[in-house]
Length: 202
Image (tube, rainbow, N blue to C red):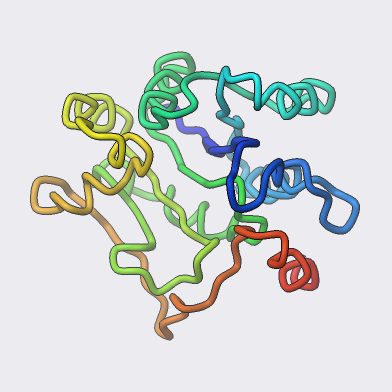
């Protein structure tokens, strides 16, 4: 069994361009996310694109010896598939690069015991009770690769989990829930204006 955390990142965000390298408390966002994920004791890799817009990000990752993999910009599902094949993964944890407050203890909990053997997808947003910006999804890599043929439109290729949630009856899905619903709380970095709100929590 081989599992890694795949951190989805790009520089061409329309709402907040180049946010991956924007410094929060003197540290780039992507480094904060990567360090937080590594506290779970799982290996991490930043998966970005081969597009020239991500060259600056790649230079930073190289310089700071952060694992990365490059594939398609628009077809995010393919980017994950290519990464799975390259690292020969049996499972992977999907984290988005705009999640500096991702809970590493929850990552550990969601990848422990027999969960990986028993489920196709382990998640905390079906339905969501955790804050936005703390989404964690753990996929069975074989199931994920097998379903590539169903990603027939750009929406599914960009939002890689959506097909599984829409067709949940066909998959074994485990959802983690909080006792109190915090789904309205936004802890992600979508806009530059989010930084001030988040930096006090890091």
